[in-house]
Length: 534
Ligand code: HEM
Image (cartoon, rainbow, N blue to C red; front, side, top):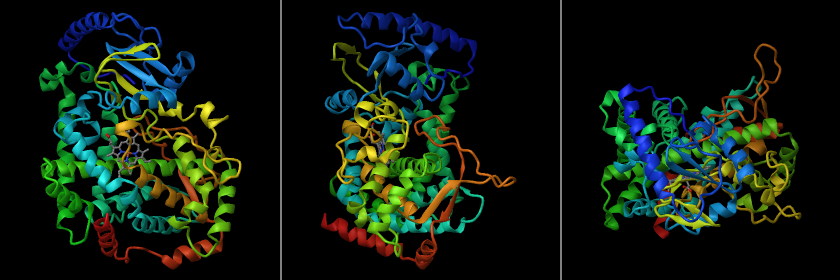
């Protein structure tokens, strides 16, 4: 969590030591409350728990802490209280039921710097300005508008099956590029009116690079300036994060501005044009540059969350045995048959496939530490005090593994845990992956829809196995938990092979063939017609 490894001039250290002593004194005074802080590892004077802070993959340590100290843990990082919530109940009690005070975001310098410019919507506090953005998000992402995107999501999934079919028979492919292209194409078509046909498209590569950078910016405590904003007054050669933030901001601004213009100039309906109209019609106080960033935030959130969830599904197929795949196929064969791909209308009759999707979110939540919240007022909970301005981490990794809710063997991929004994009715289990309360992910309907379609198509179409070693021809062993650390948990690159599970698969996929000749403008205009009726 806290990797304060920034090389600094000795003057900086003197400043920091002074600040630490100041913070220690202030913190001690502040905590002279009658109620205790939640339990947690024993802190040292001044530095707090910094010596115990995990250098990376904090969610692993948080799980251990929750076993030792319980569902609500307090740690102190150089005076900054951090509260880690590890059961669904405490996360709901605080982040949802007390949303009025738990809906701000912590000051993470690099991310907040962008937010202050009105450009990182996800890191804005819950202000009037933020709520305008949220209204726009809901207007295009809620369940009803999201349903209008199903035909386009289905088309891109068909294109994906077509792309994967071409790789059949070989040693396997790194799927990230194929999935990124498909997800990027869906979201760029809807937002800006153009499809993305190649994963090496320079625009797509730029978005991916910026997302990787942002994922690092948002780690709690990754930069010492997050704890001590005063350090930002240092000359720029002592404050390397300033150039980093500025460069990130400029690159992002140019990219989003260009895409937004493309959207506005396009002759078909798209979300850029739709939201610009809404802003005018509703008289919202939002300059066009800020609206461009609203759209860019949706692009980033969709690309990361959806792509990585799909990659974890492939990982589950390779490493978690064939049991669930066979069961899903039995259902697909009975309901869909073998002469067409599954379609969204089949969903009510395919509960097991839906349970597979829920299990991916649980087994590998792509944001294992959620997105941090911050409480703007001091409050108490279950006999503990939660100081004002605490960073609140929903420990999604552990919440998704609560045996009391999800049953035994929480580290195993078992879709059946979502269903009652009849195999059809869903249990009322609370998913954690999309966050909580007023900041819950507005893209969750969109995400669930597209992930369901792609997973149903993949299960219907392919035997998915580990890629083969080029020299020996043997399957390459894949570590099912090897992943990056950041806001998003990405599987480390691995190869997977996609072979049609029968001759009918190639026939059906080839029958639709390449989808680029389809008129996506007509599909967009159809969405526009449906929006006009809402
Ligand atoms: C599997 C896919 C996805 C996952 C796991 C995911 C997860 C999350 C989480 C955990 C949050 C923060 C919630 C909180 O603070 O409690 C969030 C926020 C957000 N997500 Fe998603 N998301 C996904 C897909 C999408 C998609 C497809 C879109 C848009 C098309 C989207 C748009 C957003 C936006 C705009 C926010 C910021 C909301 C705010 O700060 O209040 N997400 N998402």
